Length: 443
Image (cartoon, rainbow, N blue to C red; front, top):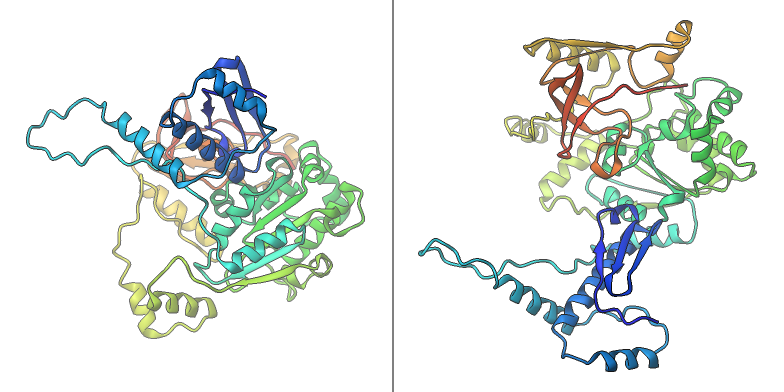
C-alpha cells in the first residue's frame, strides 16, 4: 500500500480507454489502457474530486496518514458525498479568487467562474437500460425506434461500456460511421461490395487487416442496419464463421445492431432485400427492443410530422410547415449540409454542377492502378473513383480513417481551403485542418 498525496492525471485519450496517472512522490507512472471509456472517465472524475476535496480537508500529519493507511486493507475509491462536492467548490472558489483584478472600474463581477467538477453519465430510460442489460448478458441485440428516441445516444453509451480492443463499431454509411467514431461495415469486413461468390468473399477477407478485424472482434456494432442488404448480411455471417473457425452464427461474435427499417432501404432489386429476411438474421436469434420515448424534440407537432414522414403519411399542412424552414441558415465553418439523393448519378450531377460554379484553378488527381488491367475491378470494389477534380472551396468527405482522436474518420465532412505543394488542405467540421495525402486502396 502507498499513501498518495499528489497525482497528475493525463486524460487526453480517456475517450479511447487510455490514461496515465503520475505519482511524483513515488516516482511512479501508472498506465491504463483498454478500459471501457465511460467507466474510465467516471473513475478519473471521482479520483479528481477526491484528490481536490482533500485539499480542503483538515490537515493531518504525514505520520498519522501513513499509520491510517497501514491499518486498512485494500479499498476502492469511496463513494462521492455532498461533503466532497462542497470541499471541491471551496477549493475552486479560492483558486478563482487569485485572478488578476478587472481593469474596468464599472464592470460588475459575476464571481468566480463555475466549473463542472464531476458530470455523471446521463440517465438512461428504463427501455434503454433493458437494452444495456441484454448487451451485458451477451445476447445478440437489435434495437429500433422512430427519430429522436435515443438510438444514437444509446449506441454511443454501449460503445463506451465495452472493451475497445475487442469492440468494432461500424455503420452501413460513412456519415453514420463518423458520428459513432467507427468505420464503415464494408471497410471492416474487407469483402468489398459482396457481389462475388462466397468463396471470393472469404478469399478477400483473408487479407491481413481484414482477418485481424474478424479474429479480434467479440462485439460487432452495426449502425443504420436498414441499409445492409440481405445477401450481404448472409455473406458476412458465413465469412465470420469461416475466418474464426467457429461454427456458430457470426463465429460467436456478439452482434449489436440498430436502425430503423422504415428509413432508407438497401439499394437492391431483390424482393428479399432487407437483412431481417435472411437466414443469417434468423440464426442470430436477436433480442429486439423498440424505443418509444422521444427525447430530441419537445414539440408534439414536430414529433407528429416526423412520425408521419416515417410512415409515409405526410399531410399537406405538414409539407407546408417543412417548406417554411428552407430559409434557415445551417452552414457551419463553411461546410454545407449534405444533400441526400436516391441515386448515385443524381448525386454526381449535383456535385459536378457545384464544383463548376467555383472560381479558381482546378486540380485533377488520377489513381495509379497495379496491375493496369485491373482498373475496372478496382473501380468497382473500392469506394473511390479513379479520377478526382478539386478546387478551393469544394465540399469534400474523408473516405478513410486518418486520426480517430482528432475526428478525422471515414465520413468526416470538410471544405478545401488551399493547395499546398500540390496537395489539398481541408478544414473539417470537427475543427481539424489536414493536408490530404495519397492513400493506397486494395481489393
